[in-house]
Image 1 (cartoon, rainbow, N blue to C red):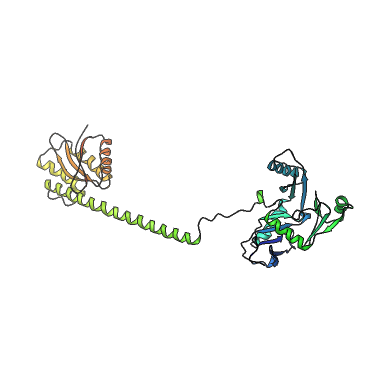
Image 2: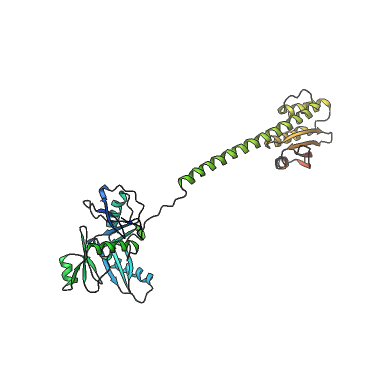
Length: 366
């Protein structure tokens, strides 16, 4: 086999039609042919185009003259006519030979069986064509084509099995010429480059696997994915630490403010109950403090990272407070929750030196 051939090598074999079929697999290029192995022994991993030759007895070839139609339309109509003239379901393919459409039809089960046998050995044909259509006709004679154990007769308008009945009906007294093996090999190799038609089409078209990425690209994708997950987790931890620190600072300030009213308050969670008791003891007034403070603490607890820095209650029934959070969205959520509970709220936003968002607000009953 020559490495300097103009066209790439191809694999050529016969489409199996029965369990006893064990065709030879050849590798061919412009310089010659080389037998690779029997199909049953094939263990190659060649990434080469593959041509599968169908025995003429397994297909029916039809010539149709449709001069008034465009080529593609003519081929479609020819396939429909072949299907209508068949006794059962068929798979067909068509191509142009001059002005005439040539069609080949095969039983779907037969084609599926043959392809399955080849695919089981890792051979996926690119071209499937009957033997009689793989060799161009001779205007002067009828050609007799033999390939391995296959035989066919090829005329200008027929391709038939080499059987006595067909010779009598279609060949008659026409001159008959044996195609030499050199001519056959050259014709089959030429067919691999430009076939007259291809039964590996339609429902039996070769499926090309889409490769999303190479192995090396997949390794880089996995590394980038791991790095992205790591960066996301790290960002989440940093954000959580930032909010935790801000919340802790605000809780400490709120606790200090509560302790100015009642030094016995040691935890922020005690503030609501103990502040109400301290206010009553100091005689500041009880009035609406209970429901106001309950509504306030309910909203603060339901809003993450929101704390109270100051809290005052006057005899006029108005609760004054300073609310703090790392951002305005959290405070807005708390204020909306207070209003939805039926309290009247007046709020003025500002920022302190640390960048935290503060809101001075008053809260009273409706």
